Image 1 (cartoon, rainbow, N blue to C red):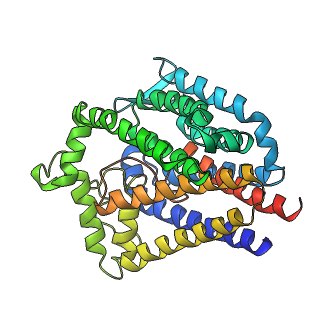
Image 2 (cartoon, helix red, strand yellow):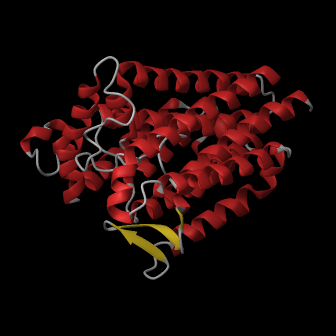
Length: 363
């Protein structure tokens, strides 16, 4: 397992290094225009990298099984923060969404904490109530209640992308745990009407779906971002235009250093660059699954599974949105996109995975 841990950490570091290079390349013109400092986002991201790596190393050197003791308090804290962020004056509103706490030059997104907190909570609950969870729907009812309340608070921000990711991950965890498929299918079918209402009763979400189906119907409006992303990927060809030579980052492609950084990778490094990034994520998944497979503890198994699923879901959605095969969701590309709390919590997930592997070596 030591080799697997080293390979997982090395793969993560390579992805982080790619992110550092691409964030500077994608953001320097925008940073110069807005802040008169081409390194503005790079310097902030390097600070996030430092905090994330230190946090990861700290997490690696304690027994992850102690997380079971704080599963409920951590879930409660995350719920309180999700409530507080909705209060005007406490939560910061950007573009009509109130998702962040702002502390001078630092931002914190409580939904990122909620992602990890609910995975820890569900892993602990199932490991303690394993037989009852598998035998009847009442057995996993507390999980559904906590999940439902958490999703409600996140949707109120509003943040439908994170809500769908959380819902998907928790339901896969329940399925892997042996919950009867009929129960899960019933809940999913019951949720579809609510999802339909959430999408088509909100004008901007409806426009996003329509833009996904036909972005050229409004090329200067809601379809602009998708079109520019596809132009960036298509312009790169096989070899790319060269590092730093992207044209779409010149105020054509919005969020070039965050949600659409994969498109800039495709433009500057070409198809080979995007394939290399996808290959690194596949390696990350492979090493993570090896760790999970070798875990005898139910809590560790489910915890590792949930964390890997969340990282995979973020990566899959981000790449899918950039390629135009999924509607715009606003989820960052793990380890590569610019982003404070999201990036740090992604690294914390890696630290917990390392801890699960390391604890398994020395039970």
